[in-house]
Length: 54
Image (cartoon, rainbow, N blue to C red; front, side):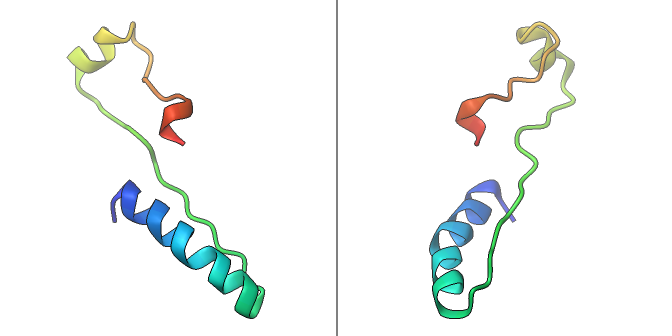
């Protein structure tokens, strides 16, 4: 399942599940993970994970 799909199912179903049955719903996605050396070199060896990836 893609990150966008996880975010959308959480946004659309979490409130309904809480209000109707008091079930808390959360999802966790891995974010951007790349093993490509040229990608890491472009960012100084640091993986470019930041606020925009939340």
